[in-house]
Length: 426
Image 1 (cartoon, rainbow, N blue to C red):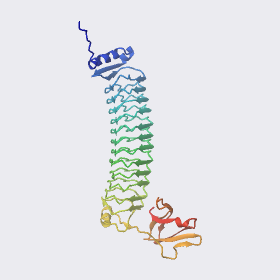
Image 2 (image 1 turned 180 degrees about the vertical axis):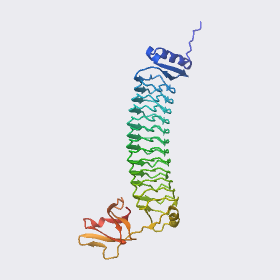
Image 3 (image 1 turned 45 degrees about the vertical axis):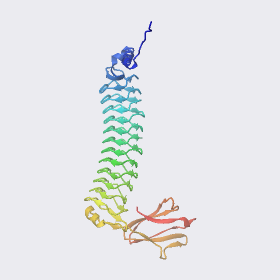
Image 4 (image 1 turned 90 degrees about the vertical axis):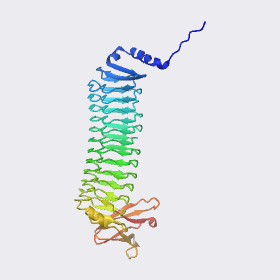
């Protein structure tokens, strides 16, 4: 007699297994949550509970849109590693939600935690690959956020209006959308890691407490108004690699006193540094071929502007109302007449020299000195270097050549023969 054979189709049985799993869940859980299954995937589709602390079961794979929308009772939330994605508006306007732990989500939908005014702790685990637009918009009490290296993109306005956000660390994002941290009025520390390739328009607009920013070399594009209205910003470092400064990028940064423009920059956009009254001096590298209209207009504190290459193309009124600004150019560079016509300034040749063939040059009793000569009223910095291989120049004195000449001297020192002198700009 032939033996009876039983065949178990695991794929066909999977939905049955999940159904059994749900059936053995506590009755209270069934009353609070509703689920849907599709090809073995469990989606949390509804919640009608009133608990303050909610831990989503680890058999859930996704959460549908609007599930916890405007859930006023929710105070703490744990999303397990089994959940791969969050839908739109899932926790939007949960006004009492104070803490959320996100363990395994890869994609966060739009408005996921928007307007959660009480949120003070949002732990985003490594593994999240994208943060949707408006994801944490107007979370006014969120004090800090670390965006892990796994995140490749941050959507528009993801943290816009987070008025209490004081610190943000961006570890691996490549693309930052528009208004990402706009209107974060208490933001004092924004660490952008090397690897970010683009900063969207208005990304940090009106971050009025941000004191300084370094744009890493990986950034290939910066949108318009990126740091517009950052009134406390005093220092900007643009690392080598940035191809251009976007239009209106630092518009109305009232406290901006210093900016480092790398040789990689080829263009400076229209109104890029407009109305920055604290800006006192600039060095424009030789790679800059175009400066947009009004790029440095409204900067009454601007003094010397030093160009290291040929004159770039210039829009109208580049230095409008900058009554103290003087543009300097180097010997052998060209096209300054056209630049003067377009920009509305008269460039001045910068070629100070150290007079070596006169009696005032060299070692004297207890001191070493020399004359610096050039056009009257030129301001020159005397610098010294003790190791030309390192090229670490230290300023010794800054003086204006009121009569076209200035005599520098300093006391004789041990090892004096190893000191090298040069002339630099203020």
